[in-house]
Length: 104
Image 1 (cartoon, one colour):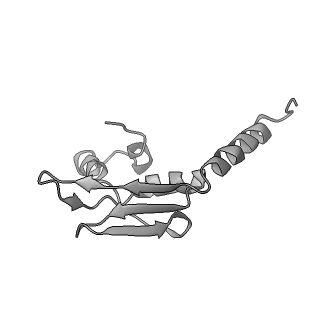
Image 2 (cartoon, one colour):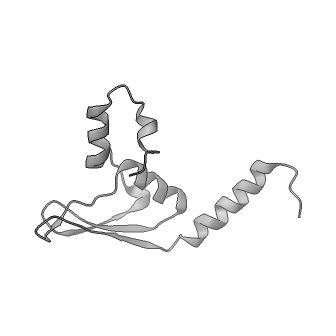
């Protein structure tokens, strides 16, 4: 079916993509140099991406090495990764929106 409007097509594709991940649970664990679990809470950019994809729950390790679970739809975080924080310190003139597009 041809679409008269490209944005309408994009919405349909986006909805299919969201439905694909709708029941997905994500597990995130970070290990330090001593192989102990440390904080792996998703940053605000990651949580926004998970919300837009429709991920249901995220399990992550906290600073104490415990596994936490949060519903992505209820996540509220202003958390930035250590890499993102270092970029802000090193390049204070860099717009915050540009930081999420930088890849290592």
